[in-house]
Image (cartoon, rainbow, N blue to C red; front, side, top):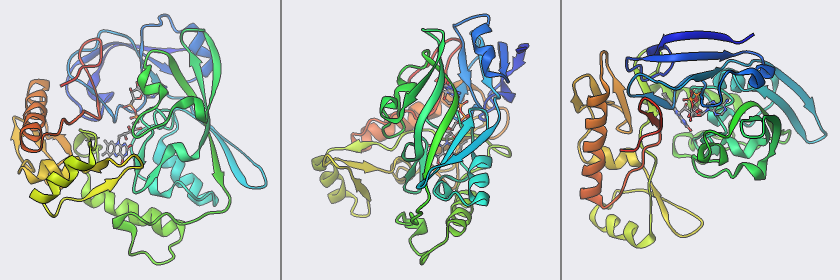
Length: 333
Ligand SMILES: Cc1cc2nc3c(=O)[nH]c(=O)nc-3n(C[C@H](O)[C@H](O)[C@H](O)COP(=O)(O)OP(=O)(O)OC[C@H]3O[C@@H](n4cnc5c(N)ncnc54)[C@H](O)[C@@H]3O)c2cc1C
């Protein structure tokens, strides 16, 4: 049976905790209920840690709360089928405790397992796509369960086929294929001083770096990185380096460079700046926080001012990473 709530407070459904109500929320606890959802015009959510509702939300929400982990193995891989509502960090910890090493660089990312493929979550030199073999989903057009293989998912930097087609699939489970032969991934700056680390040491380091740098969404309302890290051409990168020799860029395979949006925002002095109760986090300029009774007008004003400033100062157009919604649909700045 589907649990239904009317006029549910949005504060409980997204970690940025702007006020408002969701007209109706369906809590999905059995995947077979996908077929009997009373409407097809819904928005799927997990823990709302990459989603910001800027007003009352008029369309139905489906909050995925499916649970369960099944494990099998082949000679070379651990094979796990994980229900979409499992909390991501709990799953990473379960893998580490069970000796299935590989996901430790992705520790402490908020949210659900089902949302992880949507924006191909990544951190500290690792991306979830590297461990996903396939995704089980309810196809909202065809009204049947489908299995999308890794290559069907079109994974890219913070992107996938699911992000491009938000109305098409409701992810019910993710299949992981984790190599039994483990190799430490400690190339990233904050991990590079670890000498021949164990998976547990990487896990602990990632957690401590994240706790130092990022606000805990349970304590301070936020939605993680507000903007994506931008990519610029090699020529544009060289121009910027000649002006800012301390600028660091990461070379992409196609010759372009990825820059840290947080560095650009910090460079322009935005850390700690605020409009009303919405502020740029003191320790990580890429994160906007709602320090109490923040409202969407202040959030949109602050985010737009940052975006315009970065455009004028560096000729770089920042793209929003979080999913911003008005009363019906996604909005852009
Ligand atoms: C403090 C903080 C730190 C963060 N750090 C990182 C980081 O290091 N790296 C990173 O990549 N992200 C990071 N994030 C962003 C966020 O944690 C991830 O995007 C996470 O995967 C969101 O999970 P969720 O369940 O909260 O998704 P939601 O916000 O509920 O949903 C996100 C998107 O996925 C869709 N979706 C969710 N579940 C499903 C489903 N079952 N089927 C189909 N579509 C679905 C939603 O429609 C929405 O478009 C951070 C966020 C915070 C608050």
